Amino acid sequence: GENVEQHPSTLSVQEGDSAVIKCTYSDSASNYFPWYKQELGKGPQLIIDIRSNVGEKKDQRIAVTLNKTAKHFSLHITETQPEDSAVYFCAATHPGRRALTFGSGTRLQVQP
Amino acid sequence: EAGVTQSPTHLIKTRGQQATLRCSPISGHTSVYWYQQALGLGLQFLLWYDEGEERNRGNFPPRFSGRQFPNYSSELNVNALELEDSALYLCASSRTGTSLATNEKLLFGSGTQLSVL
Image 1: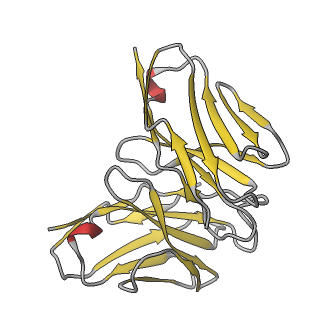
Image 2: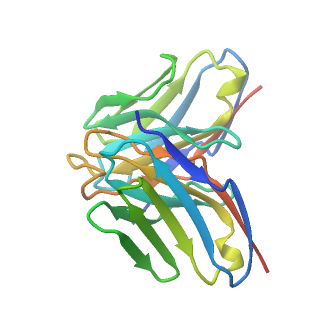
């Protein structure tokens, strides 16, 4: 089955710096890669996603890049703010699968 | 538009008891997914219901079961509770008949925190 690895497990940055979280997946048939943000005491919130027909997608300060050849995708957050502090999860799936497979999560802390 | 709602928010049980968790999907969504999030761990897929039927289950024992009602709400039942069942149980929903991989999105509720003592 699919295996998604996520790095780093924790990331601390200064406010205003950029943060990058990386994920690799094992199933070459995977073609949908969402990213979720989970704040303390809340459920995961979908923040951005990418499908394999594009290599990059951007939404304000957040961007995701996808390299299908290398089977990895990354989340980029620019100009980080304290409210970006949360746990971020990557995930992957493909048409033959009926659920998302999640990475183990990255705890991002933005220091004011 | 209301999001995915789950109840109760917190649930405390003792070992050997049964727990029932409930989920109401977003209006218009007919697929419901259940995930388990143990402390410090990622999200593990439990069950997927679509149009009232169980479509897929993750690598969990049979004492984890559930159902989906005609109004598309869902119930997760955990029998013979064990200490390691303590976790946040998350419900998510999406539209039916379409694939997450093509054009749909999975949206989560806030979860039920189950504590087994």
